[in-house]
Image 1: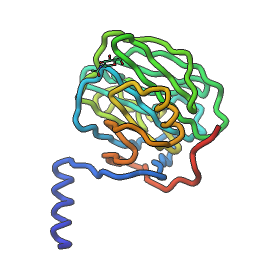
Image 2 (image 1 turned 120 degrees about the horizontal axis):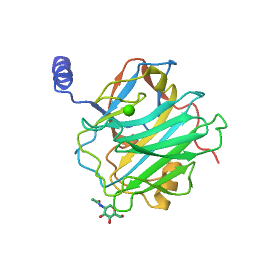
Image 3 (image 1 turned 90 degrees about the horizontal axis):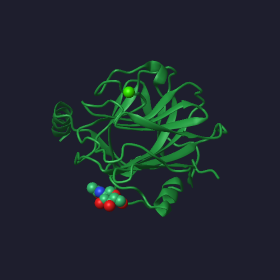
Image 4 (image 1 turned 180 degrees about the vertical axis):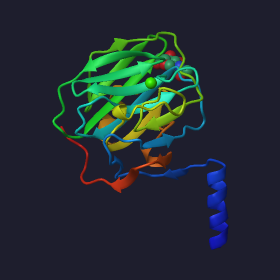
Length: 227
Ligand SMILES: *[C@@H]1O[C@H](CO)[C@@H](O)[C@H](O)[C@H]1NC(C)=O
Ligand SMILES: [Ca+2]
């Protein structure tokens, strides 16, 4: 029996099948600053996106630029990118163009963000800690490519690579989700409050991921919720 599992594990590794895990009450800890660590996420099925919502929670004391969610295709490295160039700004990139959302400088606490985009109108929504920011627009009529390298911890300047360690993430990440729809305001608030959520392309409760380098899964130290 032990040997069967060993063979299955080897087979899984060879065929690139990743662990699927419920990360409820867990976090990814990126220990180093700067760091070359990252986490690869896999979406199944891969599909082009006319609409999407990405949500995650982060906890860091970084003041330098850092990447939170990097979705690159072979044609466009910034296909979907959630990026924090400085403590008072978030950027959402879609197909290489971005909109900026100015935010109050963090209280050095967990920050929950959701960003959504809709091709038909180009409208981008940005929610911080359960609260919507004034909507902006970009890339009306665009389609996000299907075959993607999806990474946490690094910003891709090439498909699956081209990292700048000074754009790396350092700290804790949790509650990462990607949907192929724009979430309703109710669901945006549910995501912030860690309540029940619709089925997702990427779900923290059944995440297919692979750790690369110095990043570890640890239990949460406390509930990440805050007003
Ligand atoms: C994208 O969202 C718009 C507006 O909610 C909807 O009309 C459209 O059908 C959606 N497209 C896809 C492919 O889901
Ligand atoms: Ca890039």
